[in-house]
Length: 149
Image (cartoon, rainbow, N blue to C red; front, side, top):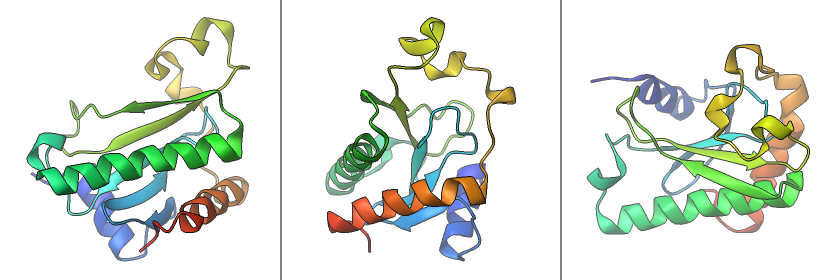
C-alpha cells in the first residue's frame, strides 16, 4: 500500500522534495515538516519497507547506525542535550525514523515529555530560506563522516 513515506522517497529520488537533505546508504535524510525542535529530521529507508523487522540483518544494522550518526551530527550543530529516536509506523505503515533534538530551554512542561505533546498544528512549518543553513550543516556533518552516497 503506497503511503506518504513512499511518496516522499519517490520525490527524493526524483530530486523534487524540498526538505531532502542528502542520500545515505540506507535512505534519505529529510528535515521535518515542522521545526518546533530545530533540526528535527527523519531517515526514510530506500527502498521503503513496512517496518524495521522487514529488513535483513545487514540492512537493519546500516539503517540504525546511520540513524545514530544523524543524531551525532544534530547534537554537534544544535547544542541539543540529547536526541530522541522514534519509529512508530502506526499511521503510516512504512518505516521512518524520527530524530528529535531535545533542548535544555524547552518549555518546562514539555522538556522531559514525549514530543507528541507539543502543539504540532501551531509549530513553525518548514521554511526553505530559514532552514537551508541547518540542512546544509547536517549534510556537511554527514559528508565529513563519509556517509553521503
